[in-house]
Length: 167
Image (cartoon, rainbow, N blue to C red; front, side, top):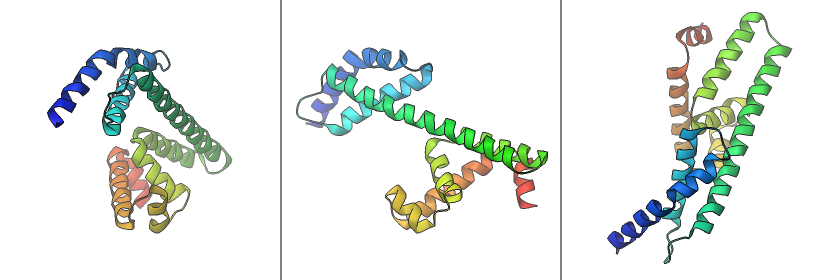
């Protein structure tokens, strides 16, 4: 049964991936990201598993929803950058401005999941319990995600930024 489903899915992917990819690529200006988003459409199709494989109409509708999420994410990232820049302008010295800009740059280099966890914890000042509720996971899972996000931040941050923070 699973092998038949896998073959159907491979056929679906082979038949429609190019059309889904082009639908997405025409709407965003990033070939690599368009490939990732098209792959997400097919991941969703696999997870939804129905008796009948979806048609191109369903795949395009799913691609439209995936694109909507991408646009929201881009808008949120831009708002974060503007908010960090505004905050840097309104307070602090030139050294503080440089440090804030470096922090913003490191945040933007992180994946969406790590950035979101750090922002919820530090920007929105959520406790681990509140973080777990927001992320819809257990408190221990939220703590682990926060720990991993902190490690990713530390790894991505320039050495001088981390020593300034400790010092």
